[in-house]
Length: 278
Image 1 (cartoon, rainbow, N blue to C red):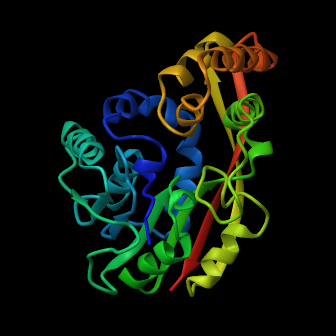
Image 2: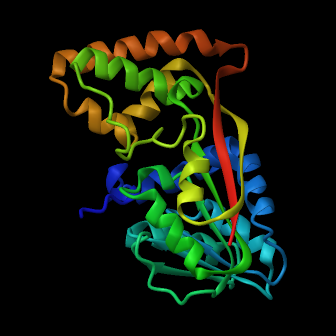
């Protein structure tokens, strides 16, 4: 079976610098939801935490601050360049309780029952087999401990990406992924995340919808950020010819103008925070 990792699915190879530069913006967007994930995972001073598909480690650092000097956080990802950014950020902040390790999320090379909590932010929906990935997270967490994740809710609740996806697919006559295929909103439909947790063997599963908001100076800035960005939007755009690509960008820019106001562009969205106990 071919395993699709988040860094491959998002087209992130070689884009660690771009992700590092967007850390502040992501913190503004996902900070509150991330705090809820850490709280639901019962992360506290002294905890040993595993962060799966950690990327550049925004949530890794938040967990490391929470566990303090008597705890530690292991950040894993399949991208060495992304983890290098995470490790450097930890050093710059003086956090000595963070370790990074390149690792396959669906086959964790870690001992069973060895962590007090496991977290995974904005990645589970991109795995080829999210139930298997969750089962691996469950295997390595201690009995009675929790695994908490963040995934995106449905596309219609996330216009920041939902609008571009719809426009590009219409212009390019590109079908949406089939049910079960990994993509940004694969676990966003009602009951999908809870079902994956249940199939992975968790107890006391709960899923919480959390509103998010993206803020940018203008619609033009929003489009420019997407043009420079990584991920599914760039991947889809690359499948269009030049004329269709420019048409799609123009339509996206026009649609984003409806989110402009006195404070710039403010686009609402929603993520789901899931948690289950071993």
